[in-house]
Length: 255
Image 1 (cartoon, rainbow, N blue to C red):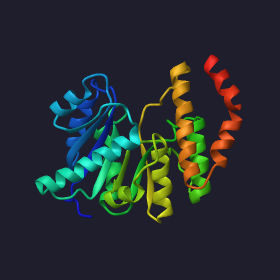
Image 2 (cartoon, rainbow, N blue to C red; image 1 turned 180 degrees about the vertical axis):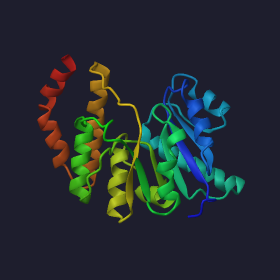
Image 3 (cartoon, rainbow, N blue to C red; image 1 turned 135 degrees about the horizontal axis):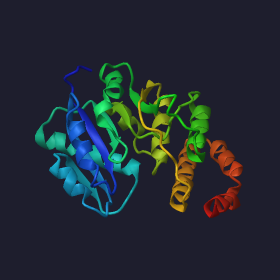
């Protein structure tokens, strides 16, 4: 892949009107990025309006459908755009989240793919910023290791860069957060190269409120389903049992 080959940036955005314009502009300023496509995933605010005003091509979901479907919708739109406008086909994709991305420092994530050293890169926190994984991430780490022989550090991170071929190989992605897991499993099973890239990120403090706990329960279910669909149930079941099953989850909600 040459440095002149365009890389398309695909951004998942949900209720992100305060952040999305800055992320779009920063992504567009990265060398070789063209175009920037935002999937507004059922936002209740004006995310789509702000993304479009910042110069992004916007795809809209009427209701939230999750990261995986948002990525696929945006990449499908990219293909239509390339055919309609006879654009050069983007050979690689930069995947971001509007509420979590800091595109200005993403060059290290892009370079291994651009240079052909990796088929997929994934952003991981520095050793100093790393935290103990929660149940969903622990299940993903264990499951991916058992299925592929490779132990990832941050399998649910959505800041990624990968070749178009790698994305097509992993489609359709598993639903929700399971898509982040299925992508890594399928890429590794295909014999493609995955490289983890440390990016300096502030330590994310996890809240203990009911919403956070419910979101983690949903994540665990989606991760477990993705692993089971690829031939593994033990990792997800182990994490579920260690959490105390349904009663354990309910107790956590009540804390």
